[in-house]
Image 1 (cartoon, rainbow, N blue to C red):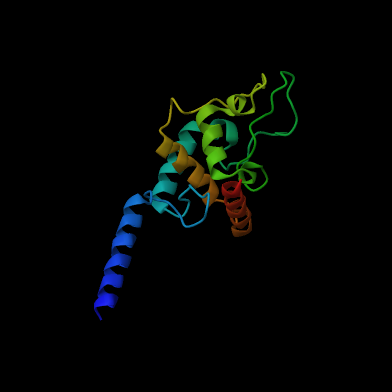
Image 2 (cartoon, one colour):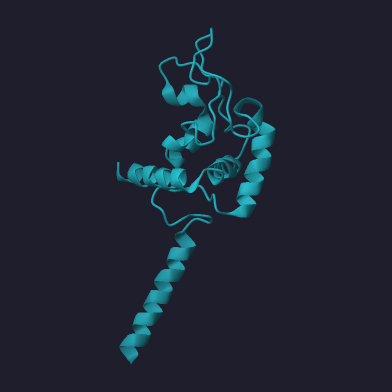
Length: 156
């Protein structure tokens, strides 16, 4: 009996410690940072997306026309963030980095892009909210693939 009580106390202590160390909004999926199921975060992200992102990426996340064809200046138009684009091909951490620092900073080598870094404009929580909103619009099969991409990114 005493061993059971000690065991239960140990489990409770470990659970409380894990809850303390586990970031707010974190998910169970390895590599997954975006709390896309959190309605409050998604609503905040939708509002920020409308104010900061929709002008280029489209009100319906549809991107700019011919987004895969370089313009005369050599830059690509803004891609869609809906399932027809490639946003979901990247793990959460990379999406946060691209949004924070901008595409040119990530690609390097003199690459030019109209996608600026938003790290001086939005907080990390706001960037995560926007990306959570975007993910929340994807169909279940795309979310499942994206979750696998996140899991694989942790194994690297």
